[in-house]
Length: 449
Image (cartoon, rainbow, N blue to C red; front, side, top):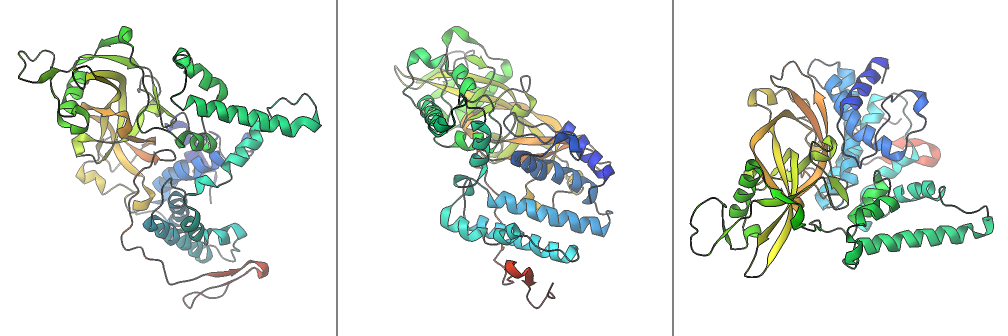
């Protein structure tokens, strides 16, 4: 199915895809035996980011061969089932959506591929909805941490004393867990506060992968803890200050009843306060265990899905231009320090171009096409309103009039609101698999395989 020409397209898209620093990357020469065995994280990135983009671009067009369309739709059913079967938060609708797509995927395998024999894992996937209802989101009990820990213990020094290895592993693990717990609490001595980035980089040198994102999400705060340094404050740019003033005067959760005015607005009205034009510019900030940075620092860490005040709180996709900590007055002798990201939103496709979006009919896949151009003016967004990163890959289509890119939300740490399915009820069709006999019995609509 994936011949050399298709693999070359996949490799080209991998090379041009922008990813955040925390995600595990697929090998750029995928399909070449030289890269060795892929890890679980690499498989996940390949199958939920790269392959859906490339294969939909190649096989999702109206003039694509019917056989290729069938294979594509079957594969995307599996990808969609994985997305809805592994979220941070579960609802009954999401579980039913998972059930719909996993059963559709299994039926597709039987119909598309002659003499296909299902595996025990595929049988198990049909029962996963029962486990999700009983035990909740799978990241609390899946095997990624065990797999990663097997890799970690290989680097623990044992001094060639096999009889003491178990105690060494346990001691080292407990030391690291206790230290991480201390660093994520408010009990860190102030003298060590400036050293936190160096300590964290030493105990967690690699923040990529499922285990690291799992550790980051537990106990994380909705708003990152920032320390404002008056000695490092600078005058905000005209665009940044205008965006901050607009946000502060329109968002009641931020101004808390205080009327703010620009520093150059002239005489103040009664009870008005001047919004400081100064802020501390940050190279990056860690929120919910994930690093966000301006585009000038790291392109992948700057691409975000966020709640836009320009869209009345609806989700938008944009690029972080700048991150800063601002101090504002909240009372007679009180102030508040808060981190903001200055974000430029990516423009949506023009109405005449939207009909050429090959991802549109796969609505639960959550991949879409946007323009590479951004919209002015930028907006100042509190860090807790940033929902997730997204992956982006340039998307060439002669039918679309402007340069564009395919974007894939990456919501493993943040709780990205899913597109809830409408009318997806559990099908009455039941597939009973007797693994021991390798026989599959299907309802009347299907013949016995």
